[in-house]
Amino acid sequence: MKKIFLLLCILSITFSTKAQLFGKHYDEGFYYDSVGVKHTGLISWSPPAKSIFGNKGDHIYYKTDKKAEQVKLKNTEIRSFGIKNDSARMDSFTVATNKDFVKAPFLHVLFDNYVKIYGFTMISSSGGGMMPGAGGVMIFTPGFSNNDTKYYYGTDTDHTTRLDKKNFIEVMSKALTSKPYVVKRVQDKTFKLGKINELMYFYRTDNYPASMHRNNN
Image (cartoon, rainbow, N blue to C red; front, top):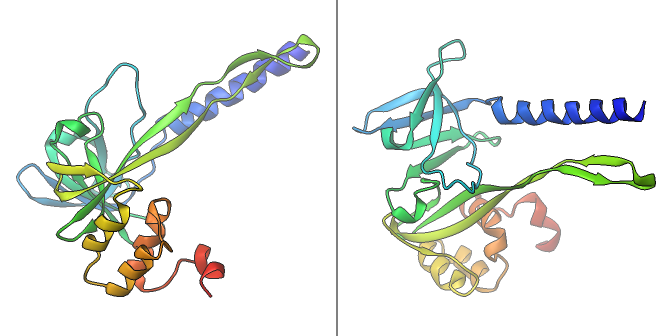
């Protein structure tokens, strides 16, 4: 009975994992093709996973509408794309030709000023496996995954430098110079590198995100 229960648990986790891997979620969006023509419709994309096999490149899936056939588009076939996020804003991504991003060339454009800020995301994961539990019974431990995002700045994707704790204040003070009061919040360390998404929200709306209200009343 224990073996049957264990087998059912493993199958359940396996089917769940497959659903996550192969199920595609589409959102409103657009992409610009290699010659600069804009195509609107539905876009599906999620950050690529790190691989020991050294895979290169990335892709999106596109539909003109919900009933249309999906089309797989490699990064070499597009210049940029946008996907509507949960807050009904459009997240913009540009395709980097810089060899530093050859494994994951889609960069999230966080700030599109003279000094641009990019987010570079890949999925880090750890596979599950069998291990002895109480009484020597073998149990299955599920794997986990999380988004690993690094940030870069530059005038374009071919001229980027890693954004880190040491240069954060200097770089963001230049990138956000059009709003001095936002720069002040960077310089007094209200916003640090770990709160760059909150900083984006503050820059766009002039309001602190809900997660920071208690600390800034």
